[in-house]
Length: 112
Length: 110
Image (cartoon, rainbow over all chains, first blue to last red; front, side):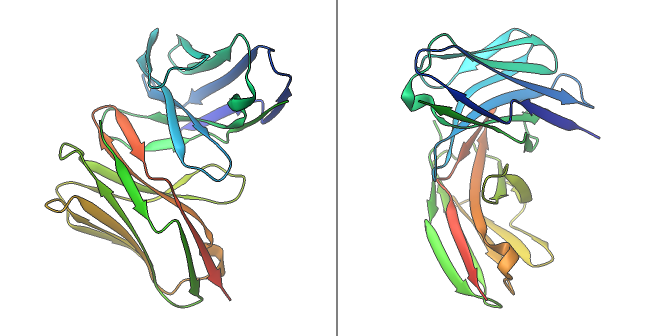
């Protein structure tokens, strides 16, 4: 069966520091991968999605970036965090264009 | 792009009553509509979904209906229980992307 991992689970970072969040998927190949951000009490905002290695689509302009160095690895990064980057970051995977998305456990980021 | 609107934003029902959450979408090309349940501090979990070639789908106490003409779909929970309390999100799939509603916070009062 498929499993999706995210780490770290929680992170407290100062403003201006770098960020690296990692997501990996097991039990499937060539998944579509997604990064979402969820602000407290709010809905899900799609940040990036990837349909293959090295292929990244960005949905909103921001100081975040994403990379997919391996088929089942998706990384969310920032060179300098802003206060507004605080939130719950969720990685998700889906198999094919018409398939359900399944979410990872999330990373709770607090920027101070 | 797609725009998914969800109503109501909060909903309180007595245990045993039914709850209905509605979503509308704008892109007629949207063809897949999942519903997720998110408990406090946890990840969204898929609870039911429906594809555009189906009008209704049921799984025990949960059902989803889709009206393609009117571009809306609804989640129905019958015989609600306290453990149904959570935030529920609808979504629509267009191309590669899911567009999520803003969520409904459901409280089931014992």
